Image 1 (cartoon, one colour):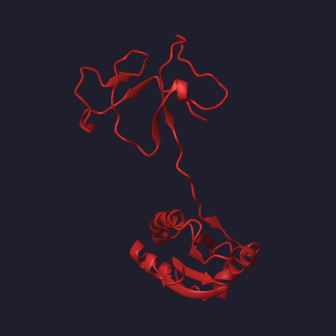
Image 2 (cartoon, helix red, strand yellow; image 1 turned 45 degrees about the horizontal axis):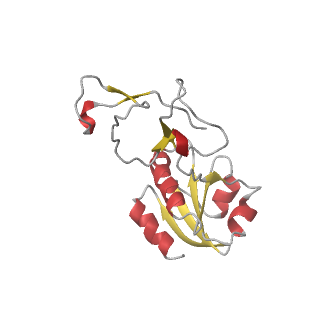
Image 3 (cartoon, helix red, strand yellow; image 1 turned 60 degrees about the horizontal axis):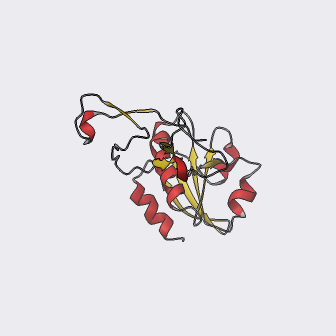
Length: 179
């Protein structure tokens, strides 16, 4: 759901023209402030707003909206003993599985990298995570002795393993071998 932003606070160091007030109002007047391109915010004319609801400012005049467009969220979903077979071993795509635990510092360090990889390889690679505390059977089945461990599966078989908090480039190199 989008909301109308009536005031926008802009820090002076952002490259905007220096004005006596740091608050810019978006209104129906013909004066405009050029905002830099953003991946999450979009300036949308009220007359261009899609949907059946007519959007107008409080005064009833046409104006503009700043609309927050959420990035597509790609989640690395957890896998457990019950879902392991269907999600990992029977997957048509190659699968990256991160073995982790909530108390593991290096696991928390590598998690944003795994999230980025899941987003970058959407449609080419499935990404999952196994909490070794909750699913010790899976961890012992694949000989997980230290975490984080990232294993790549293809056609239900373990193809490669990377142990430890490694750079993104190391994981990308491993992934690219199996795409």
